[in-house]
Length: 262
Ligand SMILES: Nc1ncnc2c1ncn2[C@@H]1O[C@H](COP(=O)(O)OP(=O)(O)OP(=O)(O)O)[C@@H](O)[C@H]1O
Image 1 (cartoon, rainbow, N blue to C red):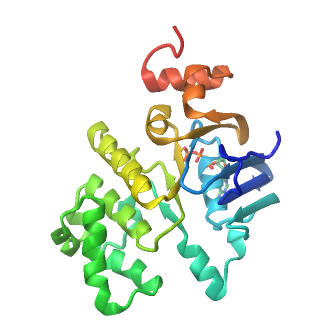
Image 2 (cartoon, rainbow, N blue to C red):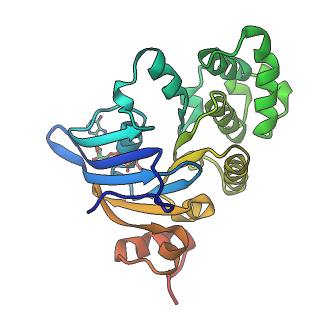
């Protein structure tokens, strides 16, 4: 498959080119290519074990590929070190599936966000107001900043995770199944929040989900992974109307609860 390009044809923010990753000799990803442009959302869908999280970790520089290249803003995220690395890493953030596991239970929600601001170089005296502003931005009452993670609901925690990701003013946020632990109503509100934040900040998302209904809500383009390979890719609306592959059709049927095409 040829390397993916962005819809606009502009230089991508994230470029993954023919990446292969094996675990204990077994391929998790094979020659996968994708690109995410500034301000756009690429939805990454596939069933469990298709390689979505592995791709997220490669994009975030937490793993190195066995073959192929990953570039964020023209640099290899796995090799980001030192001062330049820190400022570039601030531009690449992550919202995980389970914020309860990723937020330190001993830190108040506001402290978790303040910690991200500190890494970004926000002076100590400016942090309380910046935390309050971020809480408001994600639709949380700033008073909740004093609560510990165990005192917040799943939906509120996920908003804290979004606030923490936004604290560094990122260009790209990798969201790995951020709504799958939430019920449908809370899920829809979080998706609306992410869409609104994209409109106001211009942030791009690599949005991972096994659920095409969720991806449809906010993705401009969609890439379907199966057994570590790219099965199909295209504008979300086209893929939704005319999936090329039976596997994509099955994912759509699972998402809509009925046949994808009449
Ligand atoms: N650290 C690891 N060590 C060994 N095998 C791994 C490791 N990480 C992932 N794998 C394997 O790589 C394949 C892809 O896993 P990955 O977690 O990327 O899939 P996924 O699409 O995100 O699945 P899920 O939706 O269930 O999270 C699976 O077969 C998995 O068992």
